[in-house]
Length: 454
Image (cartoon, rainbow, N blue to C red; front, side):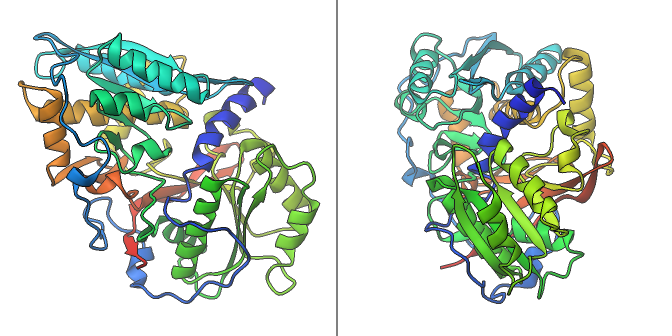
């Protein structure tokens, strides 16, 4: 694999690392033996992608950030069009970052327009602005989208930093994307098709990591052991804590849980690998979960295998068509928040995605970020259509936040519920393994439950 391809995947992985633990939590890592399950074991069994148990968690949209009425509910709307623009960290100081998300959104918008638009209005997609993974630029571009471009909505919104929230909040402009930063959480304007992945209320955890890990281990997690390693930053510490909790609740003993890998990269993996390999009373754990950047994931994976680790290794960056032939990740697992392209179950939505890329962007690899952009646009289009011909920002937000709104693409994207998923993730996901140059689905898209912990 060429270095340019690795760089693109690496940058995309940085986004997921802060969020893929599923939000919530708090506090540091630290080796700990997790408690035996205190919840219904069914919460950790793969279930339907609709009707999942929300654990009784409730969200009042009126109490969220940015819940004030729109000062200009007709912004970006005419009798014939809906103006939409995106905001994504397409590039980073080191090169390509989350490129592909803008193409995914454009693909979906093009099909919508070819099919007649949204209740007769065409989507005027002005393109996606690149914040360059710069928090200051993120604010400037959000302000430009609101004040100069006068967009109705920001789609897709997949920025590394949450700084864009203030300008969009002031203008009451809804935004749709992937729930990978805190602007997508506790905000009445942010709609992530995955739900908020960085919840901060610490009242519940999604069972998805425990559910997927149980499936990987053959459905019998009791008595098995796990280790978790994250980067040395606040978001990763929260993610590690959630991993530790949900794995423990699923019945595993967590023998190692640290957010200690330097964010600048792991220069010497020896001390970390040594601690992991002896964490289970002098022996290695059954499964290793890595929530790290691409370079650190690569280094730790290679070091663990070189040290004789024969258990399962789960990472957050290993699913990308550009990595299919990457030998270092052979047999590694990746947990996803939606259905992979390789899903064997027939899904009209997933089939349509493939057809749309083939028609409108035949040269675009259908990467994780490209899929995220596509599903973000699909979520927006579905909601705008349901809001009816008298669409305004007010009517759209009333529909989404009024209670009872759901978004789902059967077999492709699990059900999200609104306003609930402003504050919690959907407890849903899938698992794939890289085998002999291709991905195999270990666990198809399924949902667990939202598990109250207080």
